[in-house]
Image (cartoon, rainbow, N blue to C red; front, side):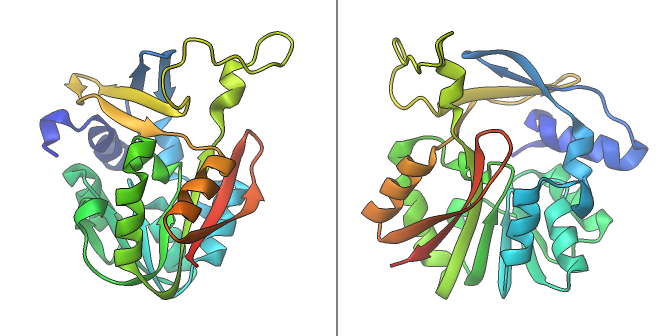
Amino acid sequence: MIKEKDPMGSAIADFHATSKAARLRVFSPMFDEDEIPVTTLFRSYDAMPAIEQEALQQARGAILDVGAGSGCHSLALQQLGKQVTAIDISPLAVETMRQRGVRDVRQQDYFTLDGHFDTILMLMNGIGIVGTLARMQAFFMQVDHLLAPGGQLLCDSSDISYVFEDEDGIIDLTGVEGYYGELTYRMRYKDVIGDEFPWLFIDPETLRDCAASNGFNCDIIAHGEHYDYLARLTRR
């Protein structure tokens, strides 16, 4: 990723340097314009949602933090005395993590990474990088490639079917093409505009089905406050 098309990395670098940032804006054809509060990317362990805290506690051995962003999860893991490798495709995020004290950080795409890890960690809907259900097979092939024997993947996501509820509480997917959790986004920070990218929100049952068809078990180990959940994936 080049810096000129890296809005999230630009926001992270700005906040780290000045303790303030402009709006990190998010656009999608399906929704109104949204915003990611940059301060949440720098939250401490105590400020994290319960399911993220649970994931950090459950992480063990050699840990891979995928899409690590500002490094908040990696830093929390280090404070817990755990061994973690942080990866992100953003050069600005990677440099910020180094400056913040993440000891092992790499600019790396998850899908081309080599190595062996006891825990793969994908938080803040990190499994969204898969993009579409059609890429789940490739995703699980890479999980299988990276996981050490007896290893686990911990990820959180959300079932966004509630977005399609009508006034009577009935989910109406009329007019929705494909899987309802397959979205497209674009981000903007100041004058930095990123490329459009696919992002996946996957409900627990669909994740279980995808895991089973690729030789993995999927256990839901925690539920959040707003349709979100934490899952553990392990080889069968």
